[in-house]
Image (cartoon, rainbow, N blue to C red; front, side):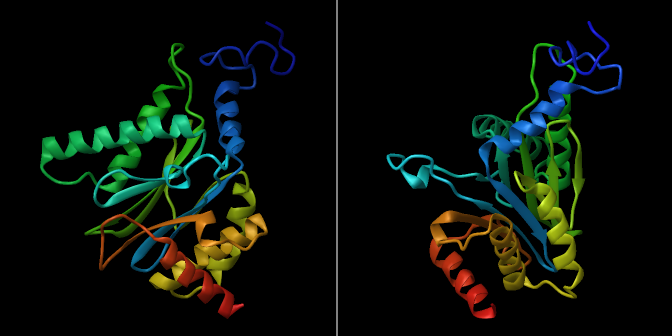
Amino acid sequence: MSRGGSAGYDRHLTVFSPEGRLYQVEYAFRAINTSKTTSLGIRGDDCCVVVTQKKVPDKLIVADTVTHVFKLTQTVGCVMTGMIADARSQVKRARYEAAEFKYKFGYDMPVDQLAQRVADLAQVTTQEASLRPLGCSMILIGYDDERGPQLYKTDPAGYFAGYKATAAGEKMTEAFNLLEKRLKKKAALPYNETVEEAISVLSTLVSMDFKPSEVEVAVVTKDNPKFRVLTEEEIDAHLTAIAEKD
């Protein structure tokens, strides 16, 4: 193996380069951007919102069957960004882990525990030669009885953390900068404002005005802690409110 650059070291998942890098894991992060979509999540005062672009790649595909938003338990859901086949595999495993937890302990798996378990499983794929990292990122939301609204993100390296606002996908860096600026000005974030802020930030990032069919929004609130995907009519009402503000 040559010591120059990444020569040879990107062929093996489990071999560190002389600079201490795992190139295959870095490539998995790049794979997230192949979907050309951006997703983001915001934690409000009494709610959590995730929003993502909805792109139907072919006119022959039934639009209802294309989604990046998934329910994991009654009270926890996620938005997936990246390679959709990998994403569905990770969602399936997360649902299994949550169901196993409820069977063992008799109550729903808390969102932080589920995020940790998903991250732990993702980390195993970075050290087994027979596996490969998943090219997707999971943003989870849920409402905790003790801690209130919760927002977590996991990545292909197996890292996870809780956030006030986060993003994943093609425009992730720009999203972090914009969210930091916008949320600094907000003293309070009630439900409607949180939803509209999330849609507005995503719209600014991708430089387009959304139709209700071009965006997916999911929420959990204090009044209704069940994970729920907003209908096109509800999204349209929020888009109208955003337009009226502008």
